[in-house]
Amino acid sequence: PLARLARMPIARLVDTLGLSAHLAVLHGGDVVYLIEERARGQARLVTEVGVRMPAHLTASGRAILAQLTPANVRALYPSRDSFVHRTGLGPSEYTELRSILAATRRRGYSEEDSEVTEGFSSVAVALRSPANLAAVAVTWQGSRDDRSHVLDRLQATVAAIDGRLR
Image 1: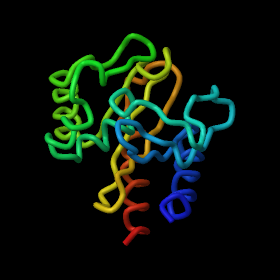
Image 2: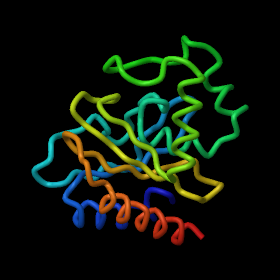
Image 3: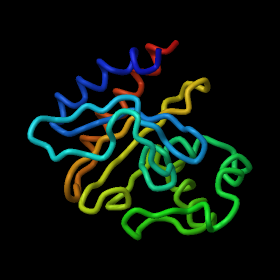
């Protein structure tokens, strides 16, 4: 039901921004992608439907993890061995992740830059539905200094999906 209700709002987000977007859910210490909408002319991403990625590296995962209690996050990351890397970037220990999640909660969105794929950046917002540990993210190639337009549209999309879930 989540993917069915989120598909159209995410497709509209991609059409509006001209950037790729996806919906992911938390599964253990990973996120699993349920929806992948690619913008025309944009580079292919690793976030195909069904792909699993380490939650602590992805913007989607960080947005979701920031909603969990510290004890739940700690249970997912009990040691330094829990922190895998793809590009050599990203948190390597729990204290680093805790700092990233605190910043995510303060801002209301998460971000990552080249931690999943070198040269790509993402921002994500978690759904507010307590029944769904999920987030919507927008990804683009390169850096983007002005995220306010992307964030406004992303937050509106998440609010629309939350409304459809009620």
